[in-house]
Image (cartoon, rainbow, N blue to C red; front, side, top):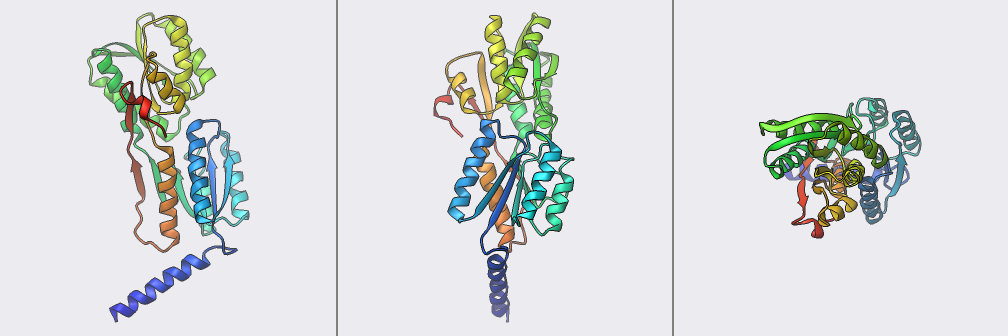
Length: 302
């Protein structure tokens, strides 16, 4: 009897897997918060490779940090009868409406890199608090545990908030470290350049800056080099340009690297498992981060 039940169950899963697609072909949709970032470009490339291997159709949209556009993009995907929605939210709370719409339509929803409110099936993202903590601990140790530091903040999505939280926790472990400023560079090179120039002018004893991402860090690096001041810089992401700067021995001394390709691969894997009938799938899958500095920068890539 048990053997028969197992056979029936397996057959049911196979039927579900082969009849789940509206036109007999898997259709995957992914909405990105932005595509003007090598981090998300590499994620898209990995997703495209996976879709090609699966023989699946892929729909990609760029919200450009506009939550209204992201919701509209998801609506359009649902009209195209996607089976899986991978969502990289530009606003974790604001995207909830779109998540609910997708679930009501019977679509499997996986949040990638940043979580989304609503009935998400699985969230796959980096250990962002760890990343902020590791970068700021690294900086504090390189400074000998003493000196004035600042944080170059970014767009207030959960991963960025967690990086700042982790960074502040690391600073608190060093009594000689004093945080004197925190300003928003919006994770943008040109914005960050001006913000950090102002920071440097306002704080003549500034010795270290933590940027919440490498895009902002590259603007910060230009400002530091232009000032001629002895200020160290750390960040989060592990972007190719940042890694190259670290390897060259610039004031940019460390970036705690994420793995965007792995995140989207694991996210798609979680969605496929559910599509194929898995009943026990993790609600959250944290992806480890890794320090990249002068010792390992030359051999590192996403």
